[in-house]
Image 1 (cartoon, protein in one colour):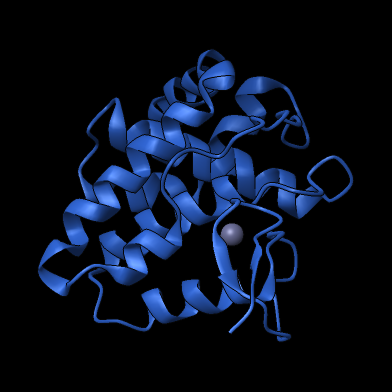
Image 2: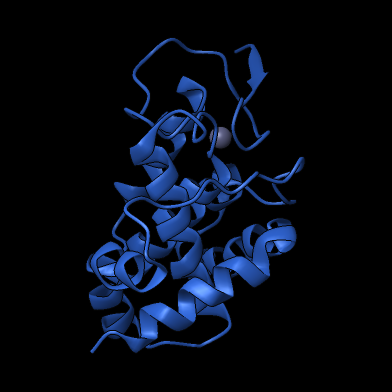
Length: 170
Ligand SMILES: [Zn+2]
């Protein structure tokens, strides 16, 4: 099977034709891998973490697409709350669901600002998570999250500010 480099995360993926997400910008083979990962028997917190990572690694088009800009911002903030604040999974899910309603008024903004993405998306991708045995998956997801968060280091201060605002909401 010929492969291509995913336009989003840079993973080497099967060169297939097929559907992609409406705004998360990936190659079809990569979106297929994400579908395979999330079709496994993942806990809700693992599904959320996988989505946080995937959204943050496929930020293309966010300059022009409001939903994509929001997706990148919200999922990066979620990664920050997970990695740096160690927010418990249930609390994180609640904050995530209402993040725009909590943070944007405190920012005095009607939409999420655009974050220029890093040139390299980190050393791990959804392809790594797809290839591990089920008993290693949780650790692999954790490593993926760390790698994605590190790759966005130029935006950490901005995102930490959003994370602090997200924690202010009741
Ligand atoms: Zn990808």
